[in-house]
Image (cartoon, rainbow, N blue to C red):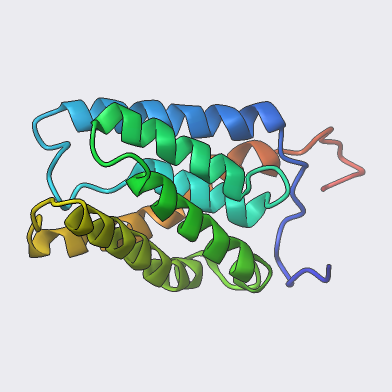
Length: 176
């Protein structure tokens, strides 16, 4: 792949870090859901952000199957309609895989703008499934969550790519 000028060559992603960050995001999501503001309709889904990030950057490691399993785990934790988050994360992961090659050519803020419709669609899928299952409409504040998730995209990009940015063997003769 031809790299843009000024773009840093990244080290390979450590599989333990990839899966560890997904499990950490799942646990953080569970922890936030237990708090007083966790069930707020505007609260962002951190697992969705990390899942889309690794689906875009490592599509062979983190795929639709992983999204489905993590969605079932979130559904079991929240005690809601089983399959609601699983379907949402599966759709989100599928769409992220379809645009991952094009998305990586853009800057991180542009990526966030292009990921926003994916997050919006994922929340819309959750809403439709919740409503079909007999749930109530959470209010218009739920449309704030995809915006917050898109704002978190640059933060996730900096944090999750940090281990790959370090030099493998820094040397005065090899500046990479």
